Length: 219
Image (cartoon, rainbow, N blue to C red):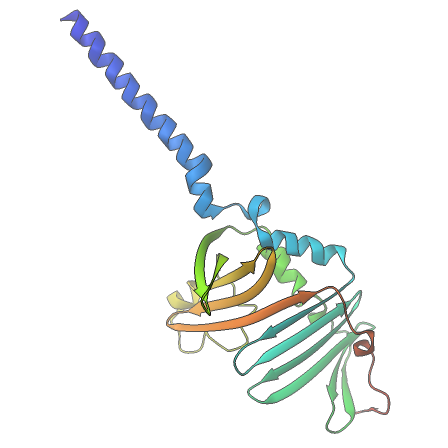
């Protein structure tokens, strides 16, 4: 009888040990394979580091109808966007923002305004400390690895929040797709709506963009 009790006790201890080891393996390896700490494994963290190390970089984002070109050079920034056929140009320089109108060759000054100076760098900085979910998805018959974040809408060009409930807005997700370490697509998923954008990042810029064109007048 005593021998049977010892066998049962050893069996129970063995089962508990197996459960504890299995739980430890899950949290150390399996769970981290799906939901990663961005500070250790994120491709966006590498992009954030590279942007911070470079005074100059440009970002091109393009959808089916809309597109944005953004360029930064130290404490200056230039944004050229096209939304529903309307073109808008902004230049950040000397602590001010300038709206440039090519059709009238005029510009308008918004003093003490540098909002666009950190238009994307601040977002990459935020993402560098956020958790994400990894996955794979095919776009145009090519499979890409993606990192999915919740509550991020900064890269969307369209107003995807329109008509959504508060719960749907809170559950908006953005996926960042990579080819190697290069960011190539961004998809924002809001309820039943989706916006897929091509994106490319370069560390070369056109210095001519950071000045008001010659012959343009104010106001």
